[in-house]
Length: 150
Image 1 (cartoon, helix red, strand yellow):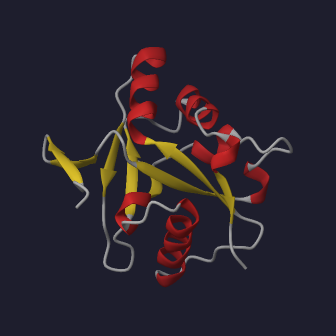
Image 2 (spheres, rainbow, N blue to C red):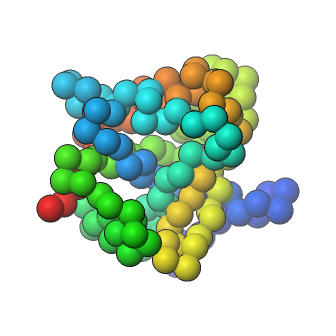
């Protein structure tokens, strides 16, 4: 069985090999398939960026994991439009790149909710830190951007 999370300072952090998906609006995806930094920008007052933990779905097939995320979001009442996409990030790579390039420690933390046990948050930056949003956007492989299902 996949080791779910690692305990660290009272937080349940995702393993470095794990991945999250970020729901992106149509305007967050550029014409070349790359994700805009706006998709990873926090709003004023937000403590973390909402994402969904793909390995929670215990499937290695990425389209099945993305379908699980979409179901989780709709089950909790979030409307996923047909024009939306999901951008995938690797937790360990993202953490290492933020540390190496920005000298900033971010964390991928499992938040699990009753209607969305895959809910995670990326902690460690603020709405005023555009460099993190820009870096995270560059870490998304265009081949790892998946359209929402109808």
